[in-house]
Image (cartoon, rainbow, N blue to C red):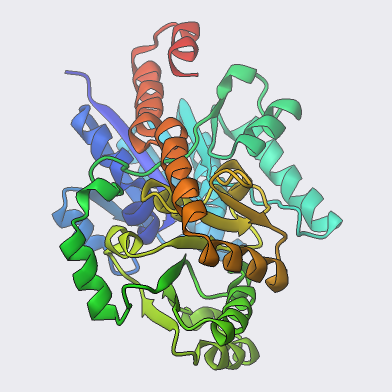
Length: 397
């Protein structure tokens, strides 16, 4: 049997664990030998016990010429030694360095999945042009296949000819396991009531949830300000926060302001959790007032659990949340607008239920992880078997 080897590259092992593992495991099921190169931040040992082949190569998450060059050299040596059929790269800096190394190593098939282009509307015109230029010409020169999670990114890449051949640009979307993991039908009422009791949530409480890093760009300050005002008017409201403020990202003035806002009896701060589906089962509304996103997985998870969503009207979020259909889109940075929409859903149970049902319908149609993984496996199989290109495009688009 022909040996089929794939190298997956990202910045840190968290990305392998949280984002890439389903694709990696499915690839292995399909007979691929998969290696995963990234920085070991403490998850390598566990990932190896799960059967993954992990290669520890330090990849800086920011531009650092000396460190970046070392990463390219190590990746190049790995590729020359292992002779991969496919190199598949993720996350901005790692994707760029991985593609440089792959091109230098003569890899035939270089795939870049953009989980959200690095340039975005909040940048200054100068910054935007710089990162747009890097993304576009790295796609043209260093990339054989460009996969876009965001439809907006996909349409931009097509319009601006990020690849010389249009059929090398594919809309991938994003997805979660909506059948075996994020499925409200799997959650029993007794389990839900037990978890509510453990967290101090009363039966008549309306629970809002946020999942993400507690940093300014996630809109956490606007959310906490909005909740502070609402909780003064209504007693039966709770805000569950999943995620922590990372030590390396702490700005002291922001940190002190956040600690003050977190000092609210209605806020349940849980840090990092692995039981997200269970926590979403006790939730009534999901909120993500972020400033910038790719195609946020947390919203898809919430929608899978039949939750209405309030999110910022930004790239990515507006591909998942359809205003007045399965939730509300609000202007980023507006705690007043966020508060208004939270109150509307807090007071209207029928609307919460209706939006939640729509969320699940949308997810089943657009964000089923199984479909997203199969698109990538089909591409891998095509590249290995050298099937007719038009056949592949016809089957997967």
